[in-house]
Amino acid sequence: MNIPGFENLMQKAQDFTQQLARMKSELAREVIQSSAGGGMVTAEVNGCGQLLRVTIEPQVANPNELEMLQDLVVAAVNQALQKAKELAAEKTRQLTGGIPIPGIEDLFTGGL
Image (cartoon, rainbow, N blue to C red):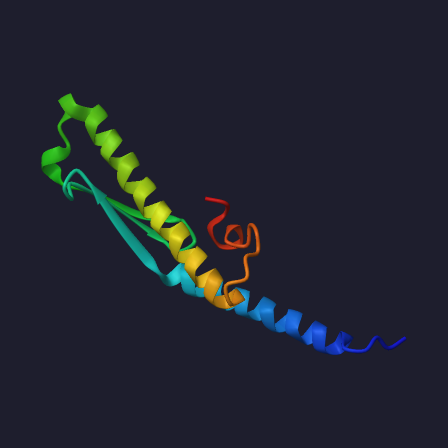
C-alpha cells in the first residue's frame, strides 16, 4: 500500500528529529550565568537547565548570615534557570518557524 506523500512526510519527520537532537546538543554547550547580591553569588547553568557551577564570594560566607547566603544561591540559580528556559524557547521558535508546539521546550530543559 503506497500512500501519496507518505515518504516525504517520513523524511521531514526524520529531518526534524535530527534538528531537535542538534539543538539539544547546542543547548547543552551553552552556558548561562546569573548572579544575586550584587554579584556575590553567581550560578551557571547550561541551556538544558543543568546547574554547572555556583560561585560564592568569600566575604558572603558569614556563618551568622547563612540564611541570606542560602537565599542568594536560590535567587541566582532560579534566574539562571529562567534564562535557560528562555533560550530554549527562542531556539525552539527558530526551529519551528514560530509555530507553537506546546511542551517542546521541555524536551531540552526537563520541564523547568
